[in-house]
Image (cartoon, one colour):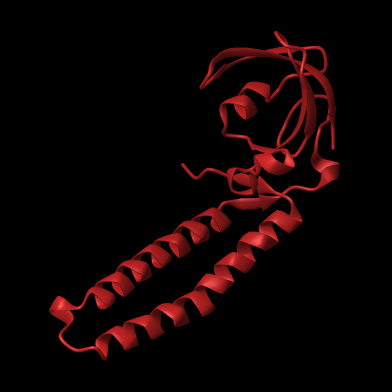
Length: 157
Protein backbone atom coordinates (compact mmCIF):
# COMPACT_ATOMS: atom_id res chain seq x y z
CA UNK A 1 0.00 0.00 0.00
CA UNK A 2 1.31 3.44 -0.97
CA UNK A 3 1.99 5.75 1.95
CA UNK A 4 0.78 9.29 1.25
CA UNK A 5 2.87 12.09 2.77
CA UNK A 6 1.65 15.66 3.10
CA UNK A 7 3.91 18.64 2.53
CA UNK A 8 3.78 22.38 2.42
CA UNK A 9 4.29 23.87 -1.04
CA UNK A 10 7.80 24.96 0.02
CA UNK A 11 8.68 21.56 1.48
CA UNK A 12 7.61 19.77 -1.70
CA UNK A 13 9.54 22.22 -3.88
CA UNK A 14 12.68 21.61 -1.78
CA UNK A 15 12.42 17.87 -2.47
CA UNK A 16 11.91 18.49 -6.21
CA UNK A 17 14.93 20.82 -6.27
CA UNK A 18 17.08 18.23 -4.48
CA UNK A 19 16.02 15.53 -6.95
CA UNK A 20 16.79 17.80 -9.91
CA UNK A 21 20.24 18.63 -8.50
CA UNK A 22 21.05 14.94 -7.98
CA UNK A 23 19.90 14.01 -11.48
CA UNK A 24 21.91 16.78 -13.15
CA UNK A 25 24.93 17.97 -11.16
CA UNK A 26 25.22 14.82 -9.05
CA UNK A 27 25.19 12.41 -11.96
CA UNK A 28 27.60 14.61 -13.95
CA UNK A 29 30.06 14.72 -11.03
CA UNK A 30 29.96 10.94 -10.60
CA UNK A 31 30.40 10.40 -14.34
CA UNK A 32 33.47 12.66 -14.21
CA UNK A 33 34.90 10.70 -11.25
CA UNK A 34 34.35 7.42 -13.13
CA UNK A 35 36.04 8.78 -16.26
CA UNK A 36 39.03 9.97 -14.24
CA UNK A 37 39.31 6.63 -12.45
CA UNK A 38 39.08 4.70 -15.75
CA UNK A 39 41.97 6.76 -17.05
CA UNK A 40 44.19 5.48 -14.26
CA UNK A 41 44.52 2.04 -15.76
CA UNK A 42 43.58 -1.47 -14.65
CA UNK A 43 40.04 -1.34 -13.22
CA UNK A 44 40.44 -4.57 -11.22
CA UNK A 45 42.95 -2.92 -8.86
CA UNK A 46 41.68 0.63 -9.04
CA UNK A 47 40.39 1.86 -5.64
CA UNK A 48 39.28 5.21 -7.10
CA UNK A 49 37.10 3.41 -9.64
CA UNK A 50 35.55 1.22 -6.93
CA UNK A 51 34.86 4.30 -4.78
CA UNK A 52 33.30 6.15 -7.73
CA UNK A 53 31.09 3.12 -8.54
CA UNK A 54 29.99 2.97 -4.88
CA UNK A 55 29.20 6.70 -4.92
CA UNK A 56 27.19 6.21 -8.11
CA UNK A 57 25.20 3.38 -6.52
CA UNK A 58 24.44 5.43 -3.41
CA UNK A 59 23.37 8.44 -5.47
CA UNK A 60 21.10 6.35 -7.69
CA UNK A 61 19.55 4.84 -4.56
CA UNK A 62 18.92 8.34 -3.16
CA UNK A 63 17.39 9.44 -6.48
CA UNK A 64 15.12 6.39 -6.46
CA UNK A 65 14.03 7.05 -2.86
CA UNK A 66 13.27 10.72 -3.63
CA UNK A 67 11.26 9.72 -6.71
CA UNK A 68 9.29 7.29 -4.54
CA UNK A 69 8.63 10.00 -1.93
CA UNK A 70 7.56 12.51 -4.58
CA UNK A 71 5.23 9.99 -6.22
CA UNK A 72 3.22 9.72 -3.01
CA UNK A 73 3.57 13.36 -1.92
CA UNK A 74 0.56 15.65 -1.68
CA UNK A 75 0.46 19.37 -1.00
CA UNK A 76 -1.78 20.43 1.83
CA UNK A 77 -2.80 24.03 2.26
CA UNK A 78 -3.53 25.80 5.53
CA UNK A 79 -7.24 26.01 4.61
CA UNK A 80 -7.40 22.18 4.61
CA UNK A 81 -6.04 21.84 8.16
CA UNK A 82 -8.40 21.24 11.08
CA UNK A 83 -6.89 23.01 14.11
CA UNK A 84 -9.40 21.53 16.56
CA UNK A 85 -7.03 18.56 16.89
CA UNK A 86 -3.36 17.81 16.31
CA UNK A 87 -2.74 16.79 12.69
CA UNK A 88 -0.07 17.10 10.04
CA UNK A 89 1.19 20.70 9.63
CA UNK A 90 -0.39 21.94 12.84
CA UNK A 91 1.74 23.73 15.41
CA UNK A 92 1.14 22.31 18.86
CA UNK A 93 2.22 23.71 22.21
CA UNK A 94 2.61 21.03 24.86
CA UNK A 95 3.58 20.91 28.54
CA UNK A 96 5.62 18.07 30.01
CA UNK A 97 3.44 16.66 32.80
CA UNK A 98 6.23 15.86 35.26
CA UNK A 99 8.57 18.87 34.94
CA UNK A 100 6.24 21.58 33.58
CA UNK A 101 8.49 22.46 30.61
CA UNK A 102 6.64 23.68 27.53
CA UNK A 103 7.54 22.92 23.94
CA UNK A 104 6.10 23.98 20.60
CA UNK A 105 6.37 21.73 17.56
CA UNK A 106 5.04 21.67 14.04
CA UNK A 107 4.04 18.19 12.92
CA UNK A 108 5.52 17.54 9.46
CA UNK A 109 6.36 14.72 7.04
CA UNK A 110 9.49 12.77 7.90
CA UNK A 111 11.57 14.41 5.16
CA UNK A 112 10.77 17.92 6.48
CA UNK A 113 11.52 17.11 10.13
CA UNK A 114 14.17 19.30 11.78
CA UNK A 115 14.15 19.41 15.57
CA UNK A 116 16.40 22.51 15.62
CA UNK A 117 13.58 24.56 14.09
CA UNK A 118 10.79 22.81 16.00
CA UNK A 119 9.57 20.48 13.25
CA UNK A 120 8.96 16.87 14.30
CA UNK A 121 8.03 13.95 12.11
CA UNK A 122 4.47 12.69 12.09
CA UNK A 123 6.10 9.23 12.24
CA UNK A 124 8.17 9.94 15.38
CA UNK A 125 6.96 8.57 18.73
CA UNK A 126 5.95 12.07 19.92
CA UNK A 127 4.38 12.96 16.56
CA UNK A 128 2.31 9.76 16.54
CA UNK A 129 1.34 10.22 20.19
CA UNK A 130 0.07 13.76 19.64
CA UNK A 131 -2.01 13.05 16.51
CA UNK A 132 -5.74 13.43 17.05
CA UNK A 133 -5.40 15.03 20.49
CA UNK A 134 -7.30 18.20 21.37
CA UNK A 135 -6.53 21.15 23.66
CA UNK A 136 -6.68 19.93 27.27
CA UNK A 137 -5.99 16.28 26.38
CA UNK A 138 -3.10 14.40 27.93
CA UNK A 139 -0.94 12.44 25.51
CA UNK A 140 0.98 9.57 27.09
CA UNK A 141 3.77 8.60 24.74
CA UNK A 142 6.12 5.63 24.73
CA UNK A 143 9.31 7.58 23.98
CA UNK A 144 12.83 6.12 23.79
CA UNK A 145 13.45 7.45 27.32
CA UNK A 146 10.30 5.74 28.67
CA UNK A 147 6.66 6.75 29.12
CA UNK A 148 6.16 10.54 28.96
CA UNK A 149 2.96 12.55 29.35
CA UNK A 150 2.23 15.90 27.73
CA UNK A 151 -0.76 18.20 28.13
CA UNK A 152 -1.94 19.82 24.91
CA UNK A 153 -2.01 23.61 25.54
CA UNK A 154 -2.58 25.09 22.06
CA UNK A 155 -3.10 23.96 18.48
CA UNK A 156 -2.65 26.33 15.57
CA UNK A 157 -0.91 26.92 12.26
